[in-house]
Length: 434
Image (cartoon, rainbow, N blue to C red; front, side, top):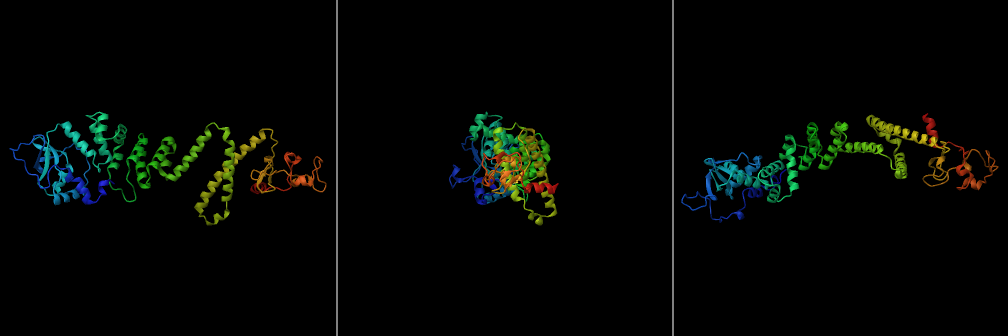
């Protein structure tokens, strides 16, 4: 909503009606028709001119005149009169408004027959420039009108002079003119003052972001509605439109789903794109640690008691999520197995519990990834004879003390004949699933 619409009525009316301190007239002076004999310069004469002798400028930069603010200004004029004269120029036997069209319109609403006006002889170019400058500096002028004012000034000014005149940089001028390249239905959004119930108004930032979809007007229109209804900020709007441009095949999804789902989709698509790039070997260990950490967190989340409190729809969604994750894990595990079997690692898929912390590990890990305990103990091996303190396979002697607490130099550390007495929980679960 323009700032002028939120100011107190009295303050806004005074601002729009001029400031007494800016006038050269004293408090006792009033505007009266200028006698014909008065020696007043022909190019700068203040007169009381009949409203029916004044015409508006069809090229006026301001196109939006809001009735509520005009009514407030009319009320102020009824009470105090027009405090600052409008500026007009002789035009085809009458006078044409150069600056002050709102005061002119409000005077008519206030029932005034005349209005104080400063008459100036001006060329079309000068009149156009003054009108543009006056309107450009008004607080309640919408961005599209300002852009058109800049466009008008540039028809007879250089970029540099225009920037100095308005007190802005050339970059600001160009950014403002970009708004005029947007479709009319987008420009209209910038002229609105009041949003529909439950919606927001588009800002310049929103509209500039819509330029990314200039090649697809239909998507632009849908994005306008999406921004207003979902109350998206500029950053979120840019994220969605950037996603549409980068992944046009997912356009319909991005236009329909909430921003939170859009972010999830982008993460998934980003992960796929990352996998298509050459892998950086130096990140492998970090990658493994990240998978291990997330795996532990996921294991803690898998609490079957939650099923009792889910609806049928929610359980279907949960099962689909877990099934998809399971398929991904199965494929990942299959490739790990193939890699282990393709090289001379002496791979055997034997799962055991860490004797210290109880974590399930493969014997090929040698040490527990949590507590770093040696995994292969003769004491847990089905081939170890505790009574004779020796291995039943090779007959080697292994004392109980070493069998319970092996070192890296112990025979069990990398023993190819190791065979756990009991299946680990992971193996039992696999057998049950089969």
